[in-house]
Length: 385
Ligand SMILES: [Zn+2]
Ligand SMILES: [Zn+2]
Image (cartoon, rainbow, N blue to C red; front, side, top):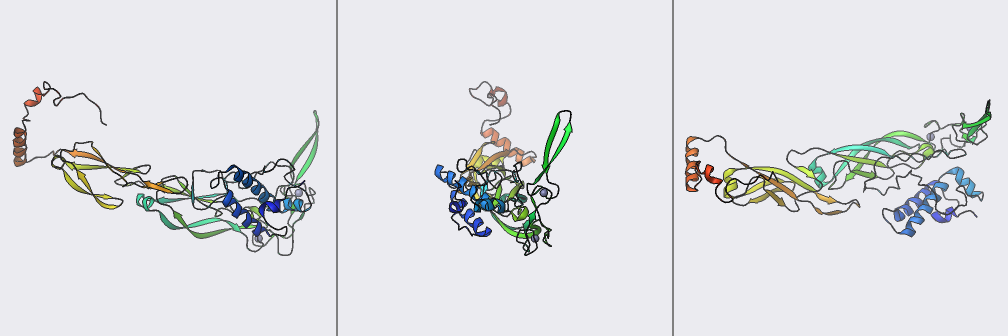
């Protein structure tokens, strides 16, 4: 018994291609495993996807309308993802998924469908650390295939339609028999006339030459959320390439290329920087104005701060962006203190430092005996940090 593909998508039998696409998108948004990990929802997602695969393909749909089942009568929900493993885009969500453009699944028997899902497109944008911190909205120019508006993807001049290929009789492949010492060898290859489609277009659309799609340059606004990092991708659902025959568009991925920053080094949501302070400041302590991503913030330096001290300013890093697209607090800013010892002293300064040394009992000659004192100036080398 054939499955009820129309019922699965909740559309009437005379529904148009756009209506079927809309119904599928709506269901896919609710049922996509990224959104709804529930077991039942995933089963239903596979069924819905299989139904869409069938009903969006005019030939397979024809089989359904004649009471058949183009996917066979095997166990339910075996439909492959028509978007080639990339999943259905949910728009503006972060995705760790890399590459693997959704190509048409080849290798099947019989004529291949004229309508194929479009592939994904990738675009890179450069962002400064400040932009990664605040998130941006930027206009980008995209050059992809879009649906041919003259034939609406059919590839035919208005009022005409494809006809069965004469060469292969609609099978999409031709067989040739060769005699060899092994006996007869039958080889099948894609029909050269219809390129395996099983049908030809007698009057191709004048705008797209029968492709059902045309190249077009357009400007779209992309929103990149705060907290993104180098290499992260934002998916714009359905903004990729329209497929052959006006097949559903792939997704557009916008990849972030983060530019190096002069002051801050990034470690996930945390930031690191080095702050050089004069010896006297480190000894006396100070409140130092620090130029952070939040503007100028005072950093309190305790009297007697040592070189290599790491001061942490909690919550002064970048927004912590989760894979769900939600922001979960902020990272910290780590300030590494480097104490600068003066190199050029004039006579007066030298005099003052000597006086200080005397007051503190730190004259040069005490250095030699320092080793004798418990826990003196010499101590075991511990390495930096
Ligand atoms: Zn043919
Ligand atoms: Zn056209």
